[in-house]
Amino acid sequence: MEKGRRIENLTRLERELRDKGYKLVAGVDEAGRGPLAGPVIAAACILPATFNLPDLDDSKKLTEKKRACLAELIKKQAVAYSVASASHLEIDRLNILNASKLAMKRALAGLAVAPDYALIDGRDKLDISLAHQAVIGGDRLCACIAAASILAKVTRDNLMCELHKLYPAYNFDRHKGYPTKSHFEALEKFGPCPLHRRSFSPVKEMVAEQEELA
Figure 1 (spheres, rainbow, N blue to C red):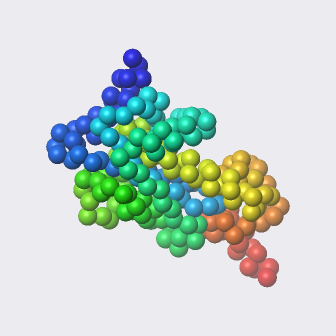
Figure 2: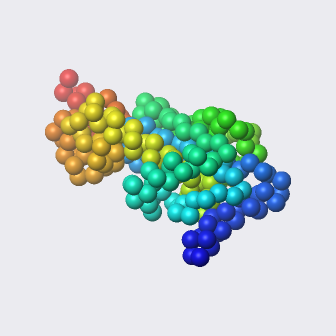
Figure 3: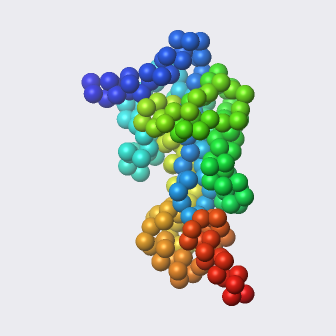
C-alpha cells in the first residue's frame, strides 16, 4: 500500500500533463557532474501511463543491485529510452553545467519515439524547441525522471568499471571517479590520467604544476 501511494505521488505531474494533452512525457536526468574523471551521462525515458515498477525511486536512494535490476525493468517497460554522454574533454571545454545540458539534449534527440513534453531534473531549462520544464529534485518527485536517473547512473557506473581496466591504478571501479580519499591518494601518487577533467580541482592545479616543471 505504501509503495502504491509513493508511485501515485511520483506520477502526479505526468498525469497532470497527460490531462493537458501531453501523452508522451520524457524524463531527463544526468549522472556524473561531481566526479574528477570520466564523462557525464544523461538519460531520457518515456514511461507508459501504466507500468509495474514498485521500487522506482531516486537512483541515489537505491543500492547498486536494486538500480541494476530496475534499469533492466525500465528498459523493458519504457515506451522509449535513450542514453547519451558528454566527454571529459567537452566538460573541460564547455564547463560541467553546459556539458550536462549537451548530454541531456543528446539523450532527448536519441529517443526512438518523439516526446510531446519533457521534465528536466534540476533548475535549468534546455535550449530546445520541445515544450519542457525544469523540476528541482525531479528524481524524487517524477517517475520518468527517476527512471532516467537510474538509467544514467547504471550506465555511467558500468562505464567507469570498464575504464578501470585501462587505468587500474585509480580504482575507478570503486569510486567511479568521485573525489574520495583513495582517488586523491592515487592522484598524488600517479598524477592525472587522460580521463581526468583538467578543469576540476585538484586536477587543474596538478596539471599546472606539471607544466611549470616541464
